[in-house]
Length: 119
Image (cartoon, rainbow, N blue to C red; front, side, top):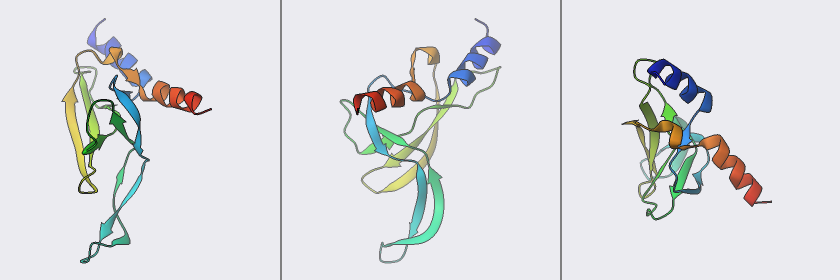
């Protein structure tokens, strides 16, 4: 499969997750500023995607699904959101190159499986 075909397939599949993804840690939503006493205010400073926990990994941080951000020239680029659970703050987006992205489970399939298990 050439890079252009791979990129098309990656975009069709959407965000992907590691095989050891265990559960949802935080739902998607706004992040609020804190005042000088550390209390949350109504001021939205950022928006974060849903983050997950992983089997065998302490939950010091939670991570979002990996979102394709490459191109047909470089389909291997992804990014994910890092949330620091100890500090309660978003660390922002991190880039990663994945050379076998079609072997990862899709976020959509994982969420569907979670929904079925909760019935």
